[in-house]
Length: 416
Image 1 (cartoon, rainbow, N blue to C red):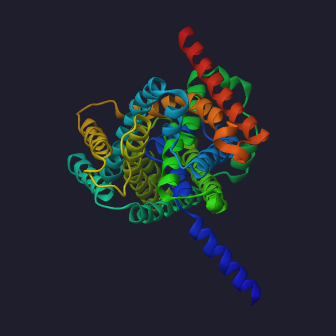
Image 2 (cartoon, one colour):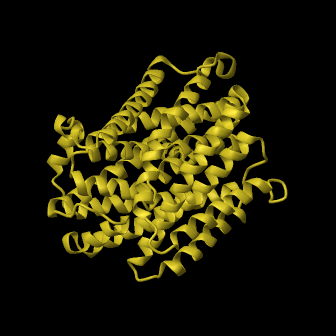
Image 3 (cartoon, one colour):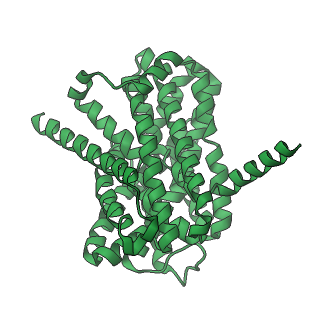
């Protein structure tokens, strides 16, 4: 029975390790992400699956760097940027991040409205009620209780794996396309380049890096405890991209193959699945969308509030009261209230905003990664914990590729 004790210890260690890394990676599959992955599957079938393996490797590397910086320095990313590069540059980055993140918050409430709309709940009821719930969850809770709720919400993403199986995809084609580079002709398609940037931008988002490092600091993780945190980051990154792979696959198997190319909102993907894959796939996709939207509607404004307050020197943190950190809580409240209000505007172009927010994530990512790499390679800051050569190589290649794709997109747009 010795092997049973060993496995019990390993399982307990695995569960104890789950925390900021697992939560942060899974919030990445938010309403904007689900819409982007769904659109990728509906428009191009399995042709964008090749991005998943390199993106997963890059996500693990980028997330691990932030977690390591938080454990070693005990400071958030925006805090380090201000100390090392000055307040003026930090203010510009914070401003860009708030603009991009606000687009993401709108996408989350769009997902809530769409998911509950599938069950005939009016958005004028669903959005205000859910906005109050996510606000109350964070404002009235402490870090440990909020983390437990977020961890439970992460498990619900298994619904997409189940929906993918129920969609009866062509598994052979899906696996081949995952390891095969796309045809060169696809790169002449401006929309394919746009969707590729969107897939990268929704998988490795700038806000994730700021939120993860702040969470590591608030949880009190040190270098001695870092082994468990690194496992947490790795598991979270792999799990979130497996879910993303299944979202693309199920939409390719149910929508693309039947000629359904355009999805007006992410909820349309669930509705379109019903006659093709059955009610179970529909319910799983819709439930996953609601969970993801509500989950991310809590995290994204929270991430923004953490980042801005750290960067500009204000008090922040869930274990502080409203009196101790007024800017933190007010910014969180304003982002939720404004994001929910925009979704209630009649005829607002919610879909374009959702995809645009993910593309803007992709465009801002190389800028954030540049500062991360500068910081993590400083001997006086990181000591022996600074980056290894291959970590630097993967991070720089990711930044260069995203920048290159962005330039291609601009060039194609200029040429019309």
